[in-house]
Image (cartoon, rainbow, N blue to C red; front, top):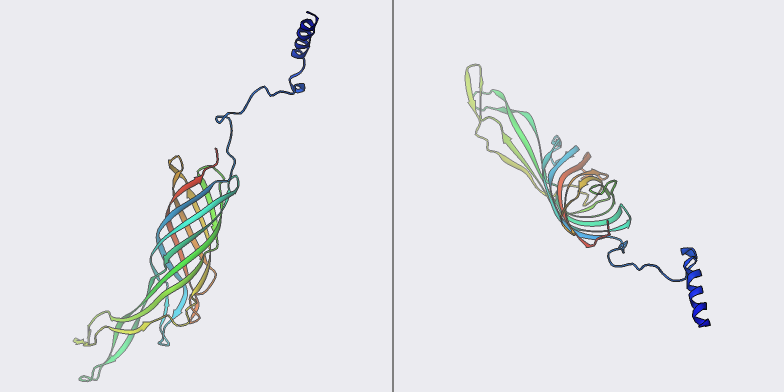
Length: 264
C-alpha cells in the first residue's frame, strides 16, 4: 500500500514538470512529416532552332573577295545533366551537335569587252559564299533560380568544328545590257570560283553563353523548358579574315527528368 502511494505521488509530480525537462519523446516523425533535402539531379534532351550570323570579314582566295554580313539557319541537338549544389543554384554540362552554317554575299561591277563592237560594258555579278560548319560542343554551365519556374543560365561552350566547306559562286545578275540603243548579251555561265575547306580555319571555337528559361511541369518529375540562348564568340572563325566571328542565338526546347527531386 505504501509503494502504491509513492508511485501515485511520483506520477503526479512528473506531470507537473516542463515539457523540455522530460527525457522521453512526445511525438515521432512519420513519412508524411519528413522532408527530403538531398540535392536534385536532372538529365535531359535539348533541341534548338535559331540563327547564325557573321561579324567582321572573311576573305576568299581571290584578293578582292571579302564576305561580310552573312547569316543562316542554325540547328542543334544534344543531352544535358545537372545537379543542385545549393537551393536555387545548379551546376551542369551539356553535349550538343550544332550547325553554324551561313551564307554571305556581295555584288560587284565587272567591265566586259565585246569583241565585235569593241565596246566595254559594265555587267553586275553576285558573289555568294556558302560557309558550311558542323560542330560538336561541350558546355559546362551554372544555373540560377530567382523564382521556382524562372532561371538564368551562363556557360562556356567549347566547340570543335569537325566538318567545314566554303563554296564561292559567281552569278551574273543580268545577261543583257542596253547602251546607245544597242542591246548586248553575254554568254558567260555562272561559275564556281572556289570549293574546298575554309582557309586558316580555327577548329576550336570558344563562346560565352547566356540564357533565360522557364520551367513547365509536365508530371511529377518531368519538365519542359523553353529557353532563349545567345552565344558570344571569343575566337575568330579563321586567320584568313578581319575579325571574322560567328555569333549564334537559339530558341531551345529542353525536356528534363528529375532523377531525385528535392522536396518543395
